[in-house]
Amino acid sequence: MSWLPLGFFATALLYASVGFGGGSTYNALLALSGFPYSLLPLVALSCNVLVVSGSTLRFARAGVIPWRRSLPLALIAAPMAFLGGLTPIKEAHFLIVLGLSLVAAGLALLLPRREEVAGEPAGSARFMPLAAAPLGYLAGLVGIGGGIFLAPLLHLTRWASARQIAATASLFILINSFAGIAGQLAKNGAGRFGEALSGSLPLLIAVVIGGQIGSLLALRLLPERVIRWLTAALTIYAGVRLLAG
Image (cartoon, rainbow, N blue to C red):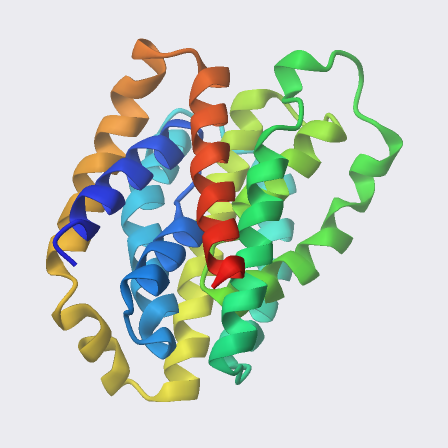
């Protein structure tokens, strides 16, 4: 597992640079390393919280978060994320759902962003709260924040400006990650949290450093589109590896 901190660092850097937490790929890296699958969501969701809490705070301080529109999405999704974390799932099924989620998330990253699609919000934008519930459940089930699925939908429907969508996705991931952790603990017992994190300190440190660098510097070094493509490639590769067994 000596390569894991580097993998977590790179994942946090890439995902933070495009406004996400990286929970899906943390899960994949842990699964490929042979980490106990029942503990995967707790580690991945904890890493999510560390990565997106800083960006959410920065967005809030900058007044970018459209609270009246963002909070309903997060508050609808959070109870479903709790239920997803509470749902028992066999290891084989967990890895299949995770692998498919990774491939779907990678493909979603390749969809056009708000900057690339001009025009007024589409009529379907008002139905986004309906999508929040299943995204929240999936997030809790496999230990992700769900923002990687939400953001492309928001961009496709021209729901808001690019910066507001990034802020909304960050808030969505943060709240869902806490709800997913609560569900996992309710399912497995509070003692599992300490067990999951006891050997994961290097990974937590790696994502804190990678997340900070990603959110502050990466977009200045590479075009956002290139970073999204790199992130999509990493995500799809990890998903295919899991599905291939």
